[in-house]
Amino acid sequence: MKGNVIDLAVAVVIGAAFGAVINAIVDSVLMPLIAALFRAPSFDDWLVLDINGVLVKFGVVLTAVVNFLLIAAAVYFAIVLPMNKMIERRNRRLGIDPAKEEVPEDVALLTEIRDLLSAQRGGAAGTTHTTL
Image (cartoon, rainbow, N blue to C red; front, side, top):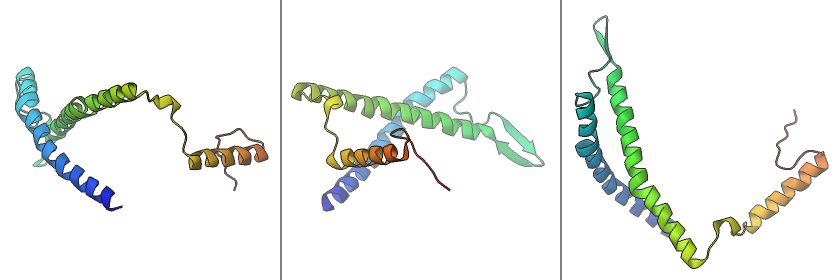
């Protein structure tokens, strides 16, 4: 248990530090490119409605959505994709086939129980039945 807590703490610290890197990439590289394309530094001033003196700024939401998509893409291409490739190469080198991995004993037992209960009820395996 303590190891998991320490791993989680390390992940949070590294994630926070990496968040600064991702934000710098988005704010300093990607958003200026988008600003050059749309001739505006952000979408904050787009679609502003003045309703009885109250400003409704849809552009701020659009800017936040674009920032989210850019950050998600940066994280995916900088972390997730290389990590998956690295794991795939390691598994290939070690001769591990993810499709042939053994099902844990408890999962196999629960699957067997589910199938037996389903057969007793006359239903197909893997379906859920609710009785009222």
